[in-house]
Length: 271
Image (cartoon, rainbow, N blue to C red):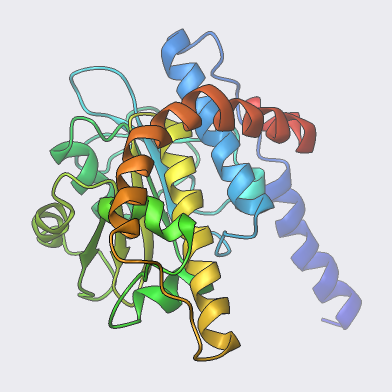
């Protein structure tokens, strides 16, 4: 087979993948579930927009209303900028797809997200990333430092979990939950960042703050050793302000603006 034939053969696979038809689920699920699907798909597109994605890896999830504790995960073989509301896979507590789907899900993603969703009734959305800045700070012995206002706003809500290898062992779920406690943010040591929220928008804004704080810390530490530390007591005051104000800012202001941005970027996420 010559080079041209090889390229043509490889393109057949690309075209086949591109031609996979994803039937719209709008009108086939409840209005409440559809809204969650649209919000979560928007979050995937925004993660890609901000450059936080890691090829097809890492995960954002959201719980579907109902006693079954079903939740939505991304298809394993789609880039984040390809995810749509209808392509999200609804899985049960054992990681099995609830409905017929041409896609599979990442078992490591199921382990981490199912742990939080099943143990924390208030964690309707869970997001986990592998950004270079998040990984760098997660590998720092001191973790996130109170060097910026962004960091101080979330420090009181931040937990840590030690690295145990790729998260495919379901026994790790108990330790993740024990380490997370009642907090909404976590640095997975030597791994990345994690956020929870009462809805997709709230979770995304928490994740945004954590990622920005990590990025600023890496830049500050690389700029030199003469760092200005905040006055005593100010990190604690700022943490209280963040705890009180972040949900309001997320739900009433920031997430609606981000949704408008997602529609401007590519409205197909809502299909």
